[in-house]
Amino acid sequence: MTAVLDVLDLIPGDFEVDAALRGLDAVNASTVIVDLASGVAAILSLETRATFAVGVAISVTTIPSSAFLGVVAGVGQASDASSALLVLAVNILMLIAGGSLTLILQRRLGRRPLPEES
Image (tube, rainbow, N blue to C red; front, side):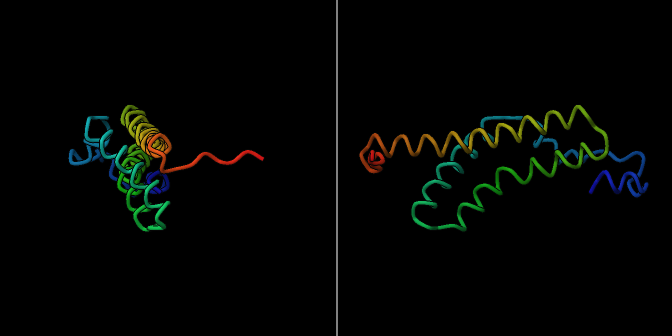
């Protein structure tokens, strides 16, 4: 959408991504912790059929970085776009890691049986 607005010359030439969004272009400890916790919440909510929690957990981690990536890419700020892509990749990897670690821990604690072989 940002690229379309830019092509239509609806974005001012001196447009800069607001400093308030700058936190979305760097990976820090809170990024990793929130993403891992979201992965855990996603697996646990799937098991208990609490489907709304899955959407909220994943949205909290991926939508801000995806939106930031779209805006900076759309206005041609390539260095910020690569940073935002890195944050999004870390978000996704930590979601997967959190969910996977939860399943591994459940299996080791005996709460999740191995599938039976045929």
